[in-house]
Image 1 (spheres, rainbow, N blue to C red):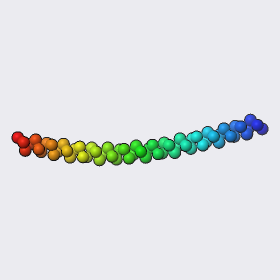
Image 2 (cartoon, one colour):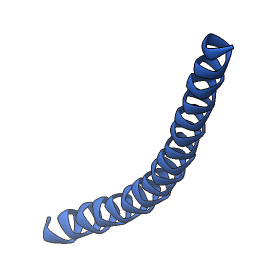
Image 3 (cartoon, rainbow, N blue to C red):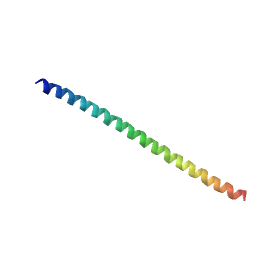
Image 4 (tube, rainbow, N blue to C red):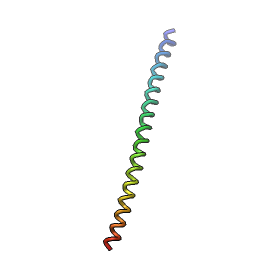
Amino acid sequence: MIIARDSYAELLEVTGNISQISSSLNEFGGLVSGLNERSSSIKSIVGLIQQISSQTNLLAL
């Protein structure tokens, strides 16, 4: 009976740990998604700067 009780307690602990890991992974996924959106914005800005730079170089000729 003691073994079953100890096993149940360990099972509850493992279940709690898995729940925490799942929560952390979900949070991490959200952070990665946010970084992806920001990097897309930065990519657009860099593209715009490159276009302006090209036009400026043409005007300088």
